Length: 434
Image (cartoon, rainbow, N blue to C red):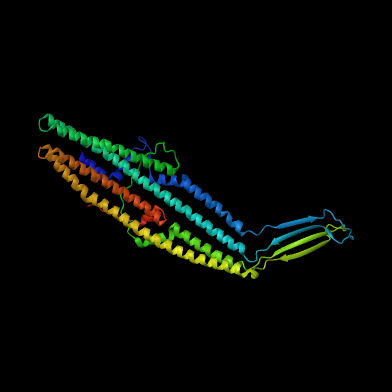
């Protein structure tokens, strides 16, 4: 039974997929990673909040590009306390004034608003990547918890057999009562460990429910596992993906565009925008609707306040330099994170291969040898329990490292700023069986 269980564990992720497809109509619903990802994208409140802010910012662009509002003014005589000849003064006045943006300041402001909207759009992508990575990591941990629970059940059955075998030897005079009690205590440890596993499973289910914006008390379903894949091994292509797609870099690029637009606006502040006005007056003795029409033009004189505008230009130019340095820093920081993440993936990949190909087969062989010796009274119960415990630990560690690998790949998507589909072509072919 132990051999069958071990072989099942080595292919547990693929087997879980098969079992999920075969038993979809009988047991609880199967929870796939794609379903979780789509639910997070559609329902997560943090993503919706970021998207709403971006949509609000987009409305600033047409506001910034628009002309100043048309200005209308009117006046009328209320009282006159002196006698004047007819048609000496106007009694009513109506004027219309419009500022003409010949300097193009409105276009510069529109570019600034568009760059700010682009920054918020990248913040949406960052929020999406963060939340999806959290969901993928939680899914991997949930899959790990389910697999460990299956291992726990199999270990319980194996230890129950050991207890029965030890009791039978004791009743036949070939063992001691202490051996029976020791085996029973080992079985109780398995029962105790199951409670901790159930707690860990519940915590990951809660995390996924919160990320998907669904009721945590509703059943979530058993996760469909993923087969173990080899780690990405093309760092140069990953470097290009990071530089091109990481939201922090794209936000820094948008900030640089924004800073340059502010420089352009600062230069245009020297150019006055004229205001054209049309004024109609009606004199006190006239019978016409309009006695006089006049046209006027007005504009500011920024050249008389040069210190103000030169300081504005200098401020904008310094902002461009700061934005460029921030972009350089974002790029090198992203590459540093990529290097660390690739090292993390490679380490998890190494651990999985070590446990899968070396430690676990050796522990299995040792257990079978000791089991045979125990059944022929050539070794003691403690030797058998120690071998069983070692195999359980190796099985658990293999599952944990496989989960860590899946989580590290999910975090790689977060670092690179791109989806799992974009990273998939970077993976090496799967290992051929030995």
